[in-house]
Length: 232
Ligand SMILES: [Zn+2]
Image (tube, rainbow, N blue to C red; front, top):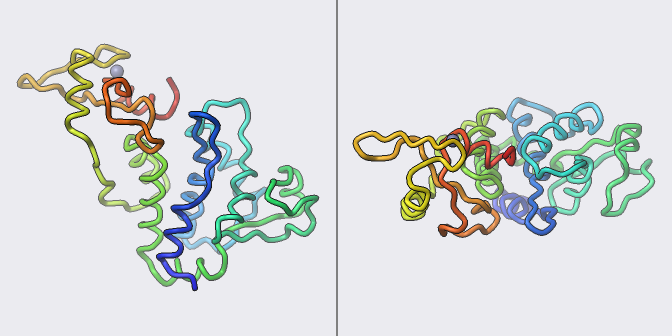
């Protein structure tokens, strides 16, 4: 039986593509995008070619790892192994296994995907579920500097993105960097306290990065955001 609990669990269990230290938030980004559209009243299924490909490509290019090529067809297809995702029109594709068919086939055959009927009905019945799932996905896969931006952009009303900061980590890292942004040297103070300076995790906490000085970097708010997005 599908319930909000089983759906939360299934989403917590989604398998994520990893290669060494590289993260691949493709599935989380796809799910956030789909949930955002459900919130706006979108029907259950999304046509891959006309509705998802371009959008997902631009999201992963912006927020995914810096690699030569992204394959948004991969998360779209492989979510079917995660117990709540449904695909339609796959019978015309050259493969039906766990490996995704080429983009061209998904487009040509109008392959569509979305939550399965049971779980989609659940989202319709429980209005708060979309927001709580979105929050769950944001917290599990993205650093705080990006959580809020993504929530805003996708239109999730997430009141309290949990601020699980370790105050000791911040103090130690800022001290180690002499209270200056490691990139631009920003070092504003007010009443002897640092302003606008943050302790960034070099390896994201979400990927097991420890709250220890060697994994820390003192950055101003702007460079923190840029750093977490991988643009530096
Ligand atoms: Zn800076």
